[in-house]
Figure 1: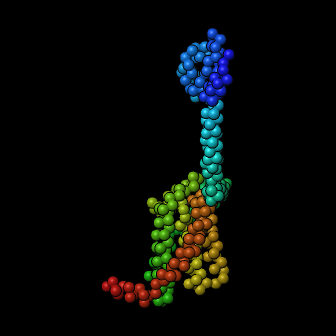
Figure 2 (figure 1 turned 30 degrees about the horizontal axis):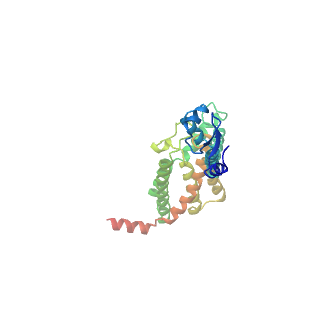
Figure 3 (figure 1 turned 60 degrees about the horizontal axis):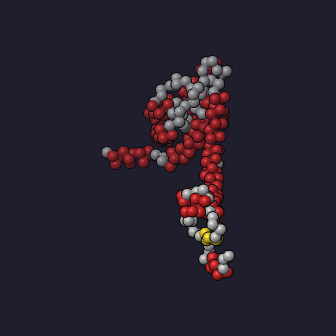
Length: 285
């Protein structure tokens, strides 16, 4: 029978008592490396015992908490990344919607794009209106009026109109080359006197020229009321013909009208008088 000292010493040393095969008490240590005869009696080897000791509940709880914290951190980050991918900006959505509406409306309004279209019989008339807003007839007409004009006021007006037409060609060509928007797919490239930049659609050069020339003529020519209304109607029909012929999209014409309206303000700022022109020519001579 063990003595009380043995029991107390065993309790203090942190050991666990056990019964051996010969009926005597033996002490099992709580260390990670138990005695070999205990490992043999339990039917395991030191390696498996070490593995079981390493898989203690404390370590499992610790690893579980670390995995839970890692998974919770990942769960907190993933929704933010998903929101960034699945929530595009409002500006991008609005721009895409506007572009889709523009293409759809332009295709529906292209009723004179070819002879087989619903309004194909009006195509020759639309092409005649197209020529009336072309740059070459306007340049030739302004140069001819400048040459034939006898008054200084008439020469001043025609000279600035000629300069405005040249400015319009330069600005429209620069914007077209910068934007490089293709013409509508249903367009037929049978336009009169085209250049390299004319394969691009944005903005409509006819619309810019019509808006600028309409403002110029209404401001510097003394015209009766019917002629003033006719000029405004001509500018609107020129812009509409670009969409009906399938040459441009609706936004190309709308931006062209705004651009031509603003170009006239620039022409007024750069207005050339005969005295200023003579002084410039004298300084160059």
